[in-house]
Length: 182
Image 1 (cartoon, rainbow, N blue to C red):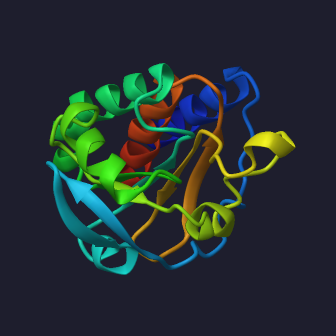
Image 2 (image 1 turned 180 degrees about the vertical axis):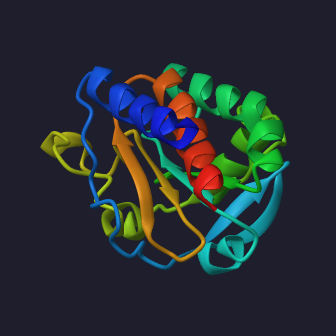
């Protein structure tokens, strides 16, 4: 019954979110990637396959570091990191910003709690279909899309929505639902 209520909440969050749509299909293989990232202002490499050996991964895409909604989203993810870690999940935010920008954002926006990846050529963003529907003038910006990827490498859940708060709530509920089944 508890797993059913988690699944129902995920469905309701998705339906209640303005402009909500999943970009890659639930159950499909998540594209493998390794990206230059920053954590606490220091350079790291985030490799999805490595992260999945430890548990599910929340991969969220956002348009631009240091903008109001993106900074709010990073703060909310940072505040929820203890719960994500308790559930065995890792989190990474990815935008088309440069690594220099991500070093600073990882400290100030993410509060040293989780890494942010630099994808200036947009290859990871495109692989995850996190650029659709953008106006021609901003095609290099990612959409606000969150994925929860199960350790088997498949998309467990996906959400595209303009507000930040739903992404954190959605990701937590999705990871909880995954954990309840496994």
